[in-house]
Image 1 (cartoon, helix red, strand yellow):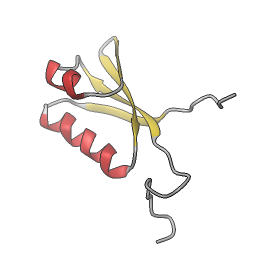
Image 2 (cartoon, one colour):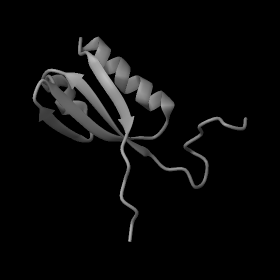
Image 3 (cartoon, one colour):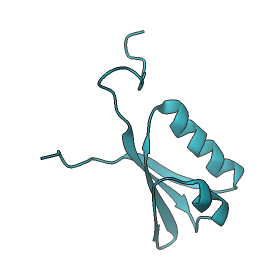
Length: 82
């Protein structure tokens, strides 16, 4: 369907997102998380590549199961490759 996000289509690639959560990240998430984790005062920033909406919602669900409060989700602009 037009407008559907199908990241398996030719020419599609993962999008980088930064998720901010309140407080520190527990070890259980650190072990399974593939991306960068940066403590920033009272929040922690998780930055990773997400293939599609279902992967993003899955990560958000994992945070919820761990009892973490999601503060924000935003796409990360990447510098153009030279």
